[in-house]
Length: 382
Image (cartoon, rainbow, N blue to C red; front, side, top):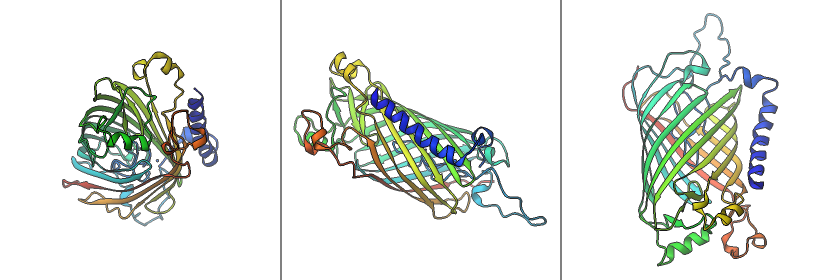
């Protein structure tokens, strides 16, 4: 439990520091007016860079505290501050990302019907909606198709749930499965397995279900948000294997088991169409005895397959003209460093017995992600 305690201390300290600095007294409990990874703007995000795989909007919601307009003047309302259209909307959102450490290229979409729940001029409740539709993803190693929906009763809270089927093509070394959660899944080992005639990549099928609550608050120019992903996995892989490596989550996923992923942001939004600040990310798989060679191996497991990162999150929206066929083109950058990771923070002299120096990646090499997101309204709206 030593690693679990360290992760909890890091998460609480990071969020607590920024809340204490920017939100004195009881401000949090009183009026979250006006922002998991990408906070919500006036409309739901284009399945933002949540990495691992979920979705926070790229920019936070507008502040609930709005300046009083001059008397006699009609205030100009920015598109992001307007209530969403009341009619039924056919929405398409897309996020395409290129990632290093681990390597990945993927496009993630969100396509379906969306409807405002009720009319409100208050920032804390203005951006409300219900959504139902598809969540397709495509990368060079696999294709995913999800079916689900979202409910956002207020600007500060969103709940997404979906189930999906993932089909791996047997390319680029994916999918690799193992008989124990203690297996070596370093980048070098995955390359060796890819090139071995006895462990070729599998044309595997994965069933995946996800529940993703998102909480986002904004205090003046400071936005705070947290995305929590609870994911269930079931594989059809080589007989006898009960864990599998997946690069987005960058760990060994348990067959018929759960993982928890967290993205927490503290962002400055004082510049128009810009959000920049810190992101903390955490991934934790939950294993049972059957995910190890024996019960003693499970007893000795100390959370080695979970990992944490902390670093920069930045997003810039090039334009926001309100609902249209192409809106909110947004560029996203994440550069973060691993606080702990079984293979990405090691040094050759500290690796466990039986591992090679080439199994580790230096802590100095960051996790890097660049992305481009947009959203489209495909029906005329009121």
